[in-house]
Image 1 (cartoon, helix red, strand yellow):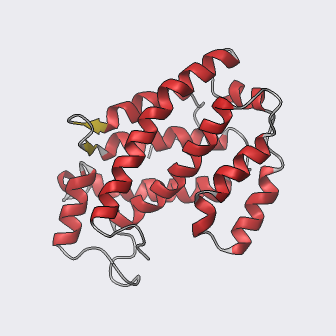
Image 2 (cartoon, rainbow, N blue to C red):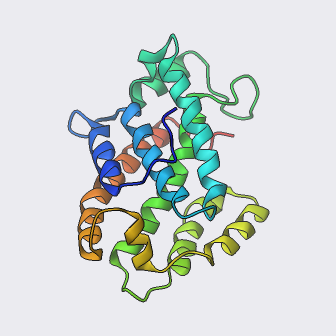
Length: 215
């Protein structure tokens, strides 16, 4: 896998999530999805260990998905729809309990999908907040509305404590390597609609195939 410790740039996340969408937003290309996620991992890691409870898991999930893409059935994992169709038709997904296929592509991507919702909500709150907004509060609100629903109590507790160490809003904007706070806000405004489209399409596909609660 490419080095996830390289310097983060919000621009690359925009480019990859924009490239994700295929045929007028009728499918999602998984290679670009994973590359967008690598950028998000760099973003989380650039803030130290605060988000490690998510970023470490994301790195392992990205690796699993990249192995599928490089594998003998790699063409079947080119897009979201082709992966779902391939794995469901081949009974390669554990639908009720983890047994024969604990790391299926569908399950693995679902975990990234859930985490993407949290980052999407958090970045949107950062974009629309005032300069003196408490980033720990914004992050906690986003987490409680998304990922917290899937985490056990001990991880939720760890997260709430970690968020207290988050830097101020303008420090976040420096990490994004775009320019002035105004330029960051503009680029977030350009990038987040693409992230939202990718998220919404993925949610719709998983919902249609009753895959939103894979064990």
